[in-house]
Length: 247
Image 1 (cartoon, helix red, strand yellow):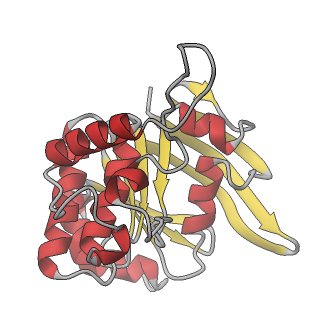
Image 2: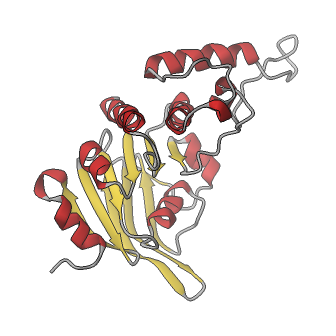
C-alpha cells in the first residue's frame, strides 16, 4: 500500500481541462520531484491532493483511505501538509507564533473554560522543534519578516513538521535562495524522508531535484509525460520531457 495513490484525476476550469487522467504513487519516506513547465498542472494537481480543489473525476487515496471527497481541514488532520511558494507566514509575528499559526494551543481557565493562547507552551514547543531540526535563526522571538528567505523557508518547514505530517508537499522551496540556504532546505528534506515522511517537491531547479529526489514525474499539458527513477534518467532527458521534445 502506497502512502499516496492518485488514480485518473481530471480537473477542468470552464472549457479548459487542466488535469487529464493523472495517476501517481508515492511511498512513505520517498522524495518525489514533480516537474513540468508553467501551466503543466502541477499546482492544480497538488491542490486536488490537499482538497483545495475537488477533482472532477478520479480518486485520491491517502494512507489506505479514500479522501477524495474530504475537505482540506480533514486531510490536514490526517497528515497532509503543503508549504506554498509564498510561505503564508505572518512577517510581524515572531518565529514561535508562526510555527503554530492558526493552530495555537490554548490554556483552560480553572481546567474547564477555554482561555487564552498558551504562549509559554508555544515558545517551549517551538524552541524544541527549532533545536531538533537545527534551524538557524537568531531567536524564536524575532519577527519572521527580519529573517532571510532561507530562514523563512525553514520556519515554514518547522511549522509543517510540528503537527507530525505523513506527507509534505513543497512548492518551489529553493527558488531565489542562496547556495548555503538551498543546502539547508535540501538537508531538511532528506531528514524528513529519513523519518518516513513522504515529500513531493515542485521545482524548476533540476540540480536541486536530482540531489533531493529518488523519482521524478513530469507533467505536460495536465498529463503524466514521464515517471522515472533518478538512477534511470538524466537531466537532459527530463528537460526533453518538460519541453515536449522527447522522441
